[in-house]
Image (tube, rainbow, N blue to C red; front, side):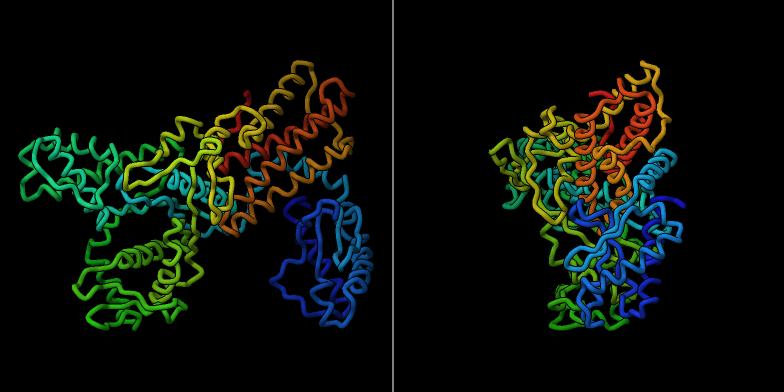
Length: 556
């Protein structure tokens, strides 16, 4: 039996059969029968069905749990799981807790070593096509730390979905037209005129960063003074600014280790009148109606708090119009799961976008929107003020240059995406165990060092794994067992933070083991077994760090 993949389904089936034998029914088939206990002293797996069924069966949960546990133990004794489950205990207020046998955990280590880089790979996605659209920052300036957080989260999530069995496509939606694009074009044009000595009024809400002065000078050098006052000056400046800033953003993301399968320009939605045809489709279906001279999306039909204007009374489109067409295009391109990572200022946008998707005939569950909260940059106790419009911000590139790519990516992932994040630059630069990314990477490097030293002493892996019985060894084996479940949980929740937390726990287990036990210098059989254990931990640490987009160094 494949230790990791088949244990829980097989044990769940035994529980359901035991319930049938007792004439008990009413358990929701969609509910998980087994879960990981929050308290490690409560075993490896917990079953709460006795509490779920107690009120309907009119029996105390503890009584029902003891009855069910007795039947389960009999079934376990004659099943393939007899050697896998070490004990079954009932705990208040009605949990049935299962502790796995040492033999099972030792066998799991062989599986980890056998699968190597594929250990933890799952089938949740079942080969379905998933698009993860993230960052998608307007090309109005270099990427900020807020964009950096979205980039790190989006890339890690895409990696996790791929590892969980989806066919993943990474996409950047390039907003290359609209009010903000006009404004950056005007800002650059005015700076170019100033550089040429031509009087010009800077727009009230224009972009004021030093990079705009640089772009203005480049525009003057490329186009010449005469072009700055011609009829095409505004359009040329806008196109120049978008092109230059898109190139900058691409370079920043490339330096950050982010690769997109496609950069999808908003302007392409105008081809073949696709955007207008999309709005006509909603009109035909009755979900776009005219009122007060404007056209409204009937989003209240799908749970939104009010209907939304899509076409203004002066025929100008609102920003949601292009997004409606873009999401229609996503589904038509064959993607079954659309994951959008948006900034906190888009929270109210979710309901109307889901309404539009349903109005066009696509499933609501096919679109999943996650909000990535803002990131506050700090130096110790000092908060660094940031404003893109005012030009007061530290770019993603500056953060990488100061703390390194690995630390930057990891620190952006240290909180759940829906929680605000404080990024301490001083802590990220430390090469001590106080730094969380260093703590995990050092665990991997420490294992590499032990393996290298053992090889010099002529000690090779391949020992008797039944010798692994110390509490610190069993704790590590139990941690390795959890890895596939963590991957599945993160993929289902569309949230990579669980993997970050897991990696920290695994690294802590490794450091505790290392502090308590020697590898080289003990009985050679035990030393060989411990080398296998370290190789297993090394494998999972490397797999997890790779999914997070962080390197696994061999030396530090």
